[in-house]
Length: 244
Image (cartoon, rainbow, N blue to C red; front, side, top):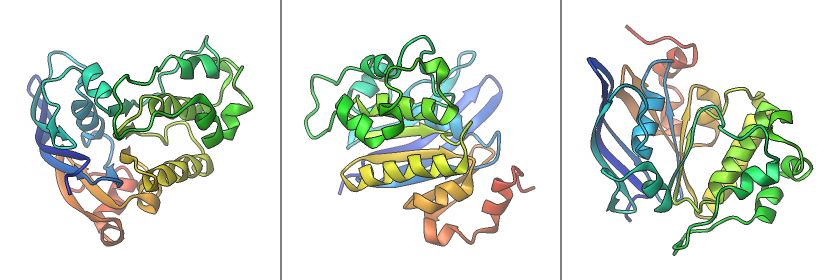
């Protein structure tokens, strides 16, 4: 079966600094894959490169990105998103002066969505009841966890084939993070594929099918979550240390 997402030889360089070095990563159809590592390991640089959005001073990005077997590299970020490769960036990125409903309405479902599910507003509110109760609240009035739910809900409105989720634990309590990831796990069982980028190793291990560990921009280890659970390098990553 063709993977939902197949990335090969992804490298990201900012001037003389190599942030990601020839990384290969696969997200199976209807699968949830985690990417973990200490601060500075290259996690966000990797996921941004997959989405086609690499900030900084003239970054150099190389490698192949395929979505459902079709090449995405070379396409602008908005074109990748239209084809179903949708990023929820670190920091939530919702509008503080707009209500929850207005933030969600900003994302219009694509015209062409064969084989993809564009979530309606009612479906988003059913997935995240906390947002239903706050639909008329402005973004600036929400907690960090609620803003993350809005950002994920808005991404689901774009009918993603693969959802790229960058550091959802930022600003969240462990309980609400688990609630968010458990909701995504149910969507995966219904056909969604997710690449979860996280520093919280424990949160990732609980729900992903497979895990990649990044160290200094390279894949140090990868495998099924059950196998990776006992890798001592994950303990180092969860403590924010990079093995020497």
